[in-house]
Length: 216
Ligand SMILES: [Zn+2]
View (cartoon, rainbow, N blue to C red):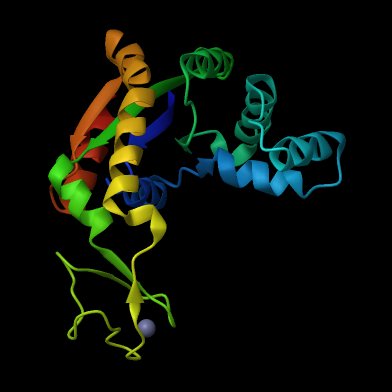
């Protein structure tokens, strides 16, 4: 049975890294709805125009359109063995729609939740500093530059992005918890939830995840 792996994790939990490694290991395509929507919005098709208008007006693309987009994408050949979803589903309605799609395609769904200690997350995000010239990323807790506030590579000043201030980070983490709790419960109920300890080294996390996927 082929698999649909849904990855979720708080901002900074390393979910993206695990998704990429998993994709490389098993050849599962990594499907991000954000990427697909952006690509479709640039296409000269009726649906493309509709999506472009929706995004431009600041509204969210409807569940129906999103489901159609996902359905089209996962019907392509590279998804036969399985695929990884990033950024979808976000709501219970979407999760139910995805269950229907999975049924039609005879696929099993697993929700992989990468969990990281909150204090660590906080440091990962608020400690981040970016070079204003070359974009190199540092972290004042885990990877500090040789000279405080300046890039090792070119000596340019480092800045903190507005997304990474402690106030914004707290708000992002809180919003994440509130929005994902129902999804986590939904998949937990019938044993489709995998919780990974993301505090460990990347390779170890990947190994554990692979073992679970291969026996599922
Ligand atoms: Zn630099």
